[in-house]
Amino acid sequence: MSFLQFFLLIMFFSIDARHNANAVKHPSFHIEEATIPQIQSEFKAGRLNSTSLVQFYLHHIRKLNPQLHAVIEVNPDALLLAKKADAERLRAGGVLLGGLHGIPVLVKDNIASKDKLNTTAGSFALLGSKVPRDAGVISKLRKAGAIILGKASLSEWANFRSSNASNGWSGRGGQPKNPYVFTADPCGSSTGSAVGVSANMVAVSLGTETDGSILCPSSNNGVVGIKPTVGLTSRAGVIPISHTQDTVGPICRTVTDAVYLLDEIVGYDVNDHKATRSAAQFIPKGGYKQFLKTEGLQGKRLGIVRDTSLPPTSAEAISFENHLAILREKGATLVENDNISNFLSLSSNGEPEHIVLEYEFKHDLNIYLSELLQSPVRSLADIISFNKQHATEEKLSEYGQEQFLQSQNTTGLKAQPYIKALKRNRMLTKTGIDKVLKSYKLDALVSSLQSTSVLAIAGYPGISVPAGYDSNGVPFGIIFGGGRGSESTLIEIAYAFEQATKVRKVPPLSR
Image (cartoon, rainbow, N blue to C red):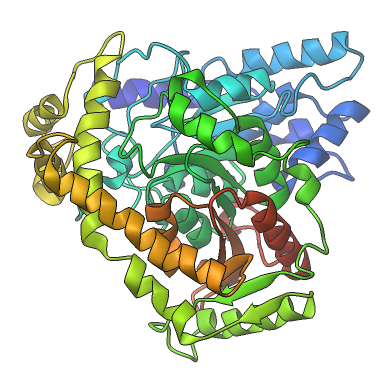
């Protein structure tokens, strides 16, 4: 163990070790799976405060993180912020002073926070760098009264360094584990955000997605993930891959919590002007909470997208069929034909997407690095060199950095290969998902994970909701995806489905 790792470990486990889980026990309140509204109700009743809540999560992190590796770093000011929130609430007579006042949030380690926490995308290359400001979504969380509990582990560089790396692995964070079955794939790149929430190490979390990085870990770890329309949430201050596809969204245990969190992070940001201005038209007056309706499936038309790779006798296939019956029972009309099922192969050709990501990664990352107040690296070329110099810590011989090298060889966003690939992606969106939704008058698509690339390329939203467990006890989800700005409709569908099924189980480790 290096001195740096030893120092971080001591800092991690020494934060107010005097406190333990007994601080928040109450006979009628189970904090482990409590939703934001339930926590807020306890705040108002005076039976719980933010200090006790943070103490509980710190205790859970100390207990579980050595096995799960979901949290890279705990905010050393978390308890101070909790005590401040309690004092504010006391002065206000128990009134909550923001939509997330006093609620701890774990954020992925590629989302910048201008505090004592690092922002490194899991890489030692950015350790000690200084960001100029909070990321746009962090600013909104602070305005809502949230407490930034710490940084979640992730696939290093959001899984854009190597195609061989294990899902969730990073040099700083190590290998996160699926809390249900340690040997199961926890998926990535927002691995720690999903594992941390699922194992009750935090109330709610933020992840990011370029292609599948919210929906997949949410599915594999038995939680809810919302991938918003690109631009609905600001990407300013987020270590980028692609300005075309990057988005920031909630990962939580319930649709309710995900919507509460989403409501606080959407909206215009001057530092992500073009995208957030364009998407702001989709934000409903009064927010998204109004769409948490148990009858939300009534009258909806859903296109079925089957995963033909699943054996018909598998738990996933059987569960999918059973859930289709529930969707019908709750009032949805299900539409199925070859044109809907086959559009995936039309619009998910990986080559144009990968070309776009390679070109945009170098361009966008170099801009991000250039704006840091302090940094050991200032370009993608610097990071490639750093990894060679620190090959052992970064497992370079095992995982490599071929995607970095391919991106470094690109020649800018005016290059013809990039322009052609971007045009191709936009055309595939129109002839694929847009055409299917319009032709069959669909409100949404229902599928398993294979639809994530289609939604990613289009920049469209999706919600993953727990759907079942395989024969080994590993969770899997069901995906509801729709057109640009269709979050309101997807929330109605996802919430009604969740309330009708209530599939999620607490992982054995965190009980």
